[in-house]
Amino acid sequence: MSILKVKNLSKSFSKQKALDNISFEVKPNKITGIVGPDGAGKTTLLRILSGLLSFEASEIEVLNLDLLSNTQIIQEQIGYMPQKFGLYEDLSVEENLKLFADLQSIPQESCQNRIDELLHFTSLYNFKDFLAKNLSGGMKQKLGLASALIKKPKLLLLDEPGVGVDPISRKELWSMVENLTKENITVLWSTAYLDEAELCDEVILLNEGEILFFGNPNILKDSMKDRVFNIVGDIKDKRETLRLALGYDFINDALILGNDVKVITNETKQLPPLEDIEAKDCLYKQAIPTFEDGFMNILKAKFNGVSKLAQQIKFIENSYENVIEVKNLTKRFGSFIATDNVSFDIKKGQIFGLLGPNGAGKSTTFKMLCGLLKPSSGEAKVLGYNFMNSSIQARWKIGYMSQKFSLYADISVLENLKFYAGIYGLQGLRKKEKIANMLEIFDLEKFKNTQAKDLPLGYKQRLSLACAIMHDPAVLFLDEPTSGVDPITRREFWNHIYAMVQKGMTIMVTTHFMQEAEYCDEIALIYKGKAIAMATPHELILKVSPTATMQDAFIELIKRSDDVQN
Image (cartoon, rainbow, N blue to C red; front, side):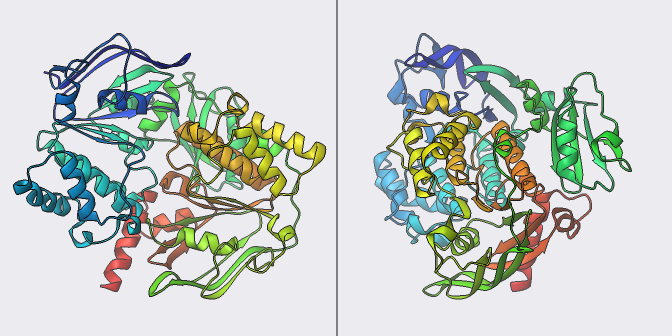
């Protein structure tokens, strides 16, 4: 028995195929993950299944009903949470739910009971009077989930509900959704987090509108058996070892994992000599494959460790040992303390990670360092400058990529690049060459006349990064640069980040991808405005357990902080 049957589904936008003759069936009371690179067709598929998009010759049965002839009946029995969920920001949590209940024609006599039930289910009851705009990212997603569940759907469609959400909130969301399957609700879950996909009962892997894999995620994991190894021991320069390993044809992928470097071989299972990748006194240790390893393999992703971006950046010289100095930094918004007496130093050529749950104070700290927010007390210096009172020329020494897409949405990619080049004082031939370089490096040439708002998410992030580093800054602030983008794009981003650091750039980054946290030289864990831990990724993990993951460490250290305060 299937709750959803799709046969020979196709969808085109102009001449571009979004979905190309795909077929699959979904079993009831299961979680089916949908994964794939940016532009693979994930959102298009969910919008078609929700009855919001037309489609080409196909047979689609939802809840044993033909979608084309029973669209309205089906829509009354499904829940859909789009990627950009449209909360009413000036309404409270409870008011939002009442509005969605009205729109769904929920009988008034049962409406309040259902709302109370959902408020308790999502742990939002104590926040029911909060305005939606004042909620953390995780709470907003919980409210979005509650709204999609208002009518007790038989089928729930979730389009990347975990984007921009911290590991604790993502774990809570997953637990909630998993419990829904026990209530006879079937779930389709689109996600950019492959650790989530690994937990699904089945996974659909889309690429360029085609299904490359459909089945239990363990099948894809097991296909990588005996091809995944960790280089363990005293690695002198992990980023250099990574770069050298990726230079071999028989190494498909490589990652930094705390003190180790992980390498994934092709089918030859050949490994490079350790002395040739500057890991002479180290060992290869066979590792357990992940779903992500299988994902990268089936997409035939191959990286060579070369960054075209870094190749056109000159080596950055500066005389500061501590490029960033933060001392007792505090920011108050009325009675609320967003950043509470935070102190740290960042050395030149470092990647420094700022981790924490949604609402912990990370973005506030970033904005103060960039001179976008004035501290209530304390001091923040970058390259010796306090940017609250520094010159324009001083500000040109830093680059900033904000958490939310903040470029000009209604102008083209090319026009955005020209605008930011002008802001940073680039003129004449240098300006022209720099724009051409950015278009090539970030594969934006094909989108150069496309309005920024119409770009796929991964390409929006590429454009944001291109604008942030247009002027070769000495210091780069990246606020969740890979939020919502696929693993391939994340690898490309970090390839550029590593290479820029080797050119002398200092980089400060926030991320909700705990794997990315392991790429950093040092991490500050921020919670409730305070720095509750500061250490290398490996040291942070050891505070919890030698066998812990970074996600385990993140969750446990925050729990311990709560236990101390309580």
